[in-house]
Image (cartoon, rainbow over all chains, first blue to last red; front, side, top):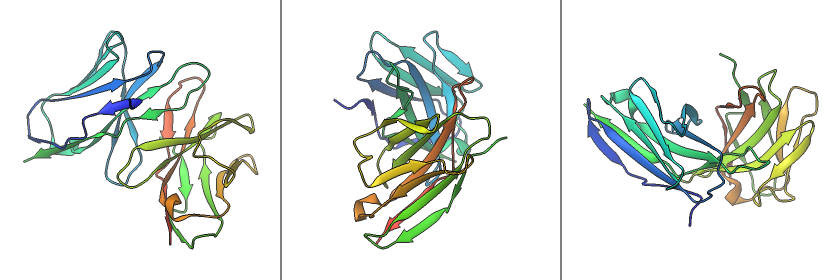
Length: 111
Length: 113
């Protein structure tokens, strides 16, 4: 089983749509959870951390379900500029702080 | 906003040659990392570095790879004898103990021919 698993997409949605991405992770001891955004051939950039209580940042809402080892990201009112690959990222826990990346989900917002 | 600077942005090298990729971390950051991303694949952890020594490395980081912080500012990744399969984007990342957040550099695209 992959450490972090995501639907690769692509998700093609019209401007203004709401889109949801899901991610599962295999290590139940995973400690920290993030969504990163990566534009083509660019570096990953932190979109938001994900907390057990769920958290929101403008049009973006992230949820974590530790029992199901499941993370989600909801984007409301999609903009053209949201087109990118969205990476689900976890840290394994313990003494390590390395980031474990999923393969990413490609979002294309259409005009 | 503070940045992690990587040079060069693109390097082409012949198989078997040595390459050194350079990173200038954010000045007050204490933890340094190298990640790589082969085209079309996920970002993979290579190595972490803290207090002037390697704190963790992945199975990818074999004897052909080394890291150092030679002058207290630059953080370098050396690949001793490059292989075709080393072609990838290499990202440096740094982290401040306080915030815990990572900042990635813009990457070096390494092409081995």
